[in-house]
Length: 274
Image 1 (cartoon, rainbow, N blue to C red):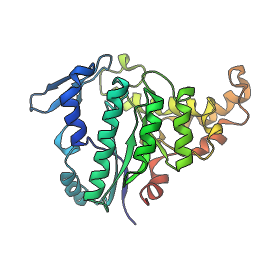
Image 2 (image 1 turned 135 degrees about the vertical axis):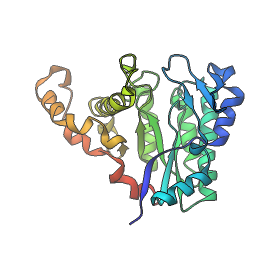
Image 3 (image 1 turned 90 degrees about the vertical axis):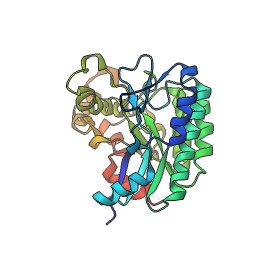
C-alpha cells in the first residue's frame, strides 16, 4: 500500500521569485528574517509569511519523503496564498505556482502531483486559469482557501469555478487562511490549534446551507485536519434544519449534503491516480 500525502504545502521557487520582484509594487512588503530568508507581510493579515528552503527544494523533499516512508505528495500552496493580490498579479502568481507544480511532476513523476491555485479574487480570471492549468501534466485537483478576502464560499461569484471543477472531475481541496476571530487567537498558537479547525466547519456550513453542494452534486470537496470541527457538528446542523426558520430553505438534512465532503484519507488514492 502506497503512502500518499495530499496535505503537502510547497512554495514553487518561481512563485517566490515573482513575489520578490513584484510584491512591493502590488501592496505587500518583501523582507528578510534573521536567517536571511524571504518574508512577506500583507496589510490586514496578522502574521508574516516565510518561505523556508525545506518547503521549496523538491530534491530535499524527495529525501525527506524517503526517510519517513511517503511515496507521493500532492503539492499545494499555503499562507499567504494569492487572494490578497490585485487580480492581474494574482493571476500571474497562480500561473507561476501551477507551472512550478508541472515542472516538479516532470522531474519526479512518481513522487509528486499538483493542486492548482486560482486567483479567486477575480473569478473570471480564476476560470481561465483553471482551464489552462487543468491541461498541465501532474495537476489533479484545485486548491482554495476557506474564504476569499472575507467572502464565504457560497458567494455566487464563485459558482462558475465550482461548475468547471465538477465538469472536469477535479476535487476541490480547501485550506484555512487568516481564520475568523484571529484577533483573539494571537497567543498559544491558537490560530492553528483552534482557528483552523473551526474555519473548516464554517466552510463546510457555507457549502451545505448555501446550496453549493446541491447545485453541484458531483463536486468532491476535501477538508484537511480530519475535517476540523465539521464532523462533530453535523448532528447539530440537522437539528437546526429541522427547527430553525433561518434554514427553512433546506430541502434535506445537512448530513445528506455532507456526503460530498471528505477528508484526505478518503480521497488520496483517487487524487494521485492521475
